[in-house]
Length: 87
Image 1 (tube, one colour):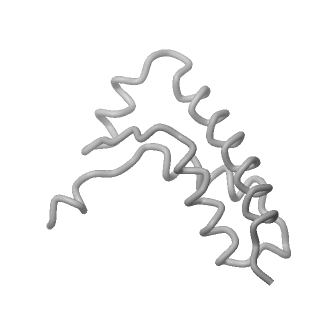
Image 2: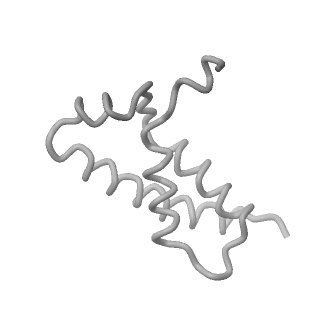
């Protein structure tokens, strides 16, 4: 296992969940991948090695705040990607 495989960003699954919540039938895989990249770039990195540790150290209400921030970032990213698509 490489070092890269041992570290994860806590926002990645939260952003993926927000994308699923806002998914539209016409969304292509490429579009959604672009949305995920843009959304993650707008959020702070929150790296961890073990998800159990991450959950233990989150302050009360921090997870809900992170979920709301992820949804906001995804909505903003969707608009950004739509307005910057190449024809």
